[in-house]
Length: 113
Length: 111
Image (cartoon, rainbow over all chains, first blue to last red; front, side, top):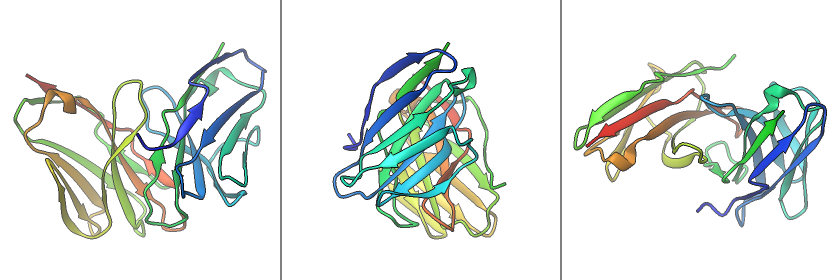
């Protein structure tokens, strides 16, 4: 157990809909990173939040957006869902250090029909 | 584009043998390197982190880093059926705390 929690566990949406995924970071961690993992592939970095500000973004379109709250929990929002958005969405928490380890939550499995 | 490469496998290993996993990375200034284990349908679980050239041992696991060759490896000694999983190599960009992952190596330990 890493102390990182995510909700919901599973989610089914249809194309064009919007979805919000939630993450609570490990106690004492101020940084949350989000990753998308398609079936059979390694996780891909979406973006990172540090002290409520976006701190880097991967190669994802603007319809992927996020928030971080004062308690360091975070949300990932995806608008205009596409079939290719079907994936495991992973949240990882860490301290803001280049060498610090990221600890992953259990993930949210999103299926877009 | 920064890349991390792994052999996708499957790497089939008899129980009790040594499993050897390899990973190469393209960003020469990368500072931190991680191995995660991922069981099917689960999230990645940290096994090892390594920051300096050489070997780092933790139980049955040994990570090896060679920054000159841009190469990091993981050895699993006395492999057990419970070690059957996908092993992900991850590299932390020098400019920030963002991980670039390889595609993972699937390991099958046969009793």
